[in-house]
Amino acid sequence: MSTTTQASVRVPNYTDAMVNSMVSTYTANPTNDTVVALAAELGKNKRSIIAKLVREGVYQAAPRLTKTGAPVIRKSDYVSRIETIIGISMPSLEKASKSDLKNLVAGLDVAVSALDLA
Image (cartoon, rainbow, N blue to C red; front, side, top):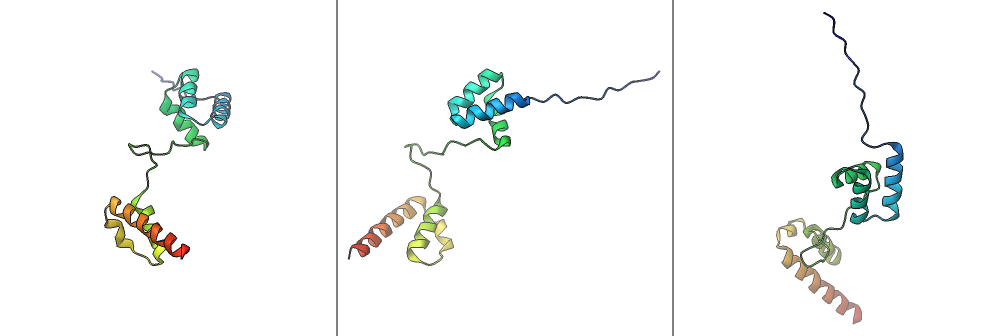
């Protein structure tokens, strides 16, 4: 009894034409709505479209926002700002609470602008 094996041929999820169309459509209007429209048009799910756009190097993630809609600012960004104003390195300052760092930056900005006016 002889067995024959067939070489498996990998069928790509996206054709070159699909990729070109997807990239051009997304780069013209890089929004979540465009991704949803592409998913419906190509019969793929949204995550698949995003993954392909990431691999093509064109996907732009939506900026992270807080509950109030303000952009997320990291504690390290506050510490960097404080270090820039003061002119010394303070790496352990990141252990302070985020609200304290935010208040410190605001206070230093006011103090610096008061000195600039004098």
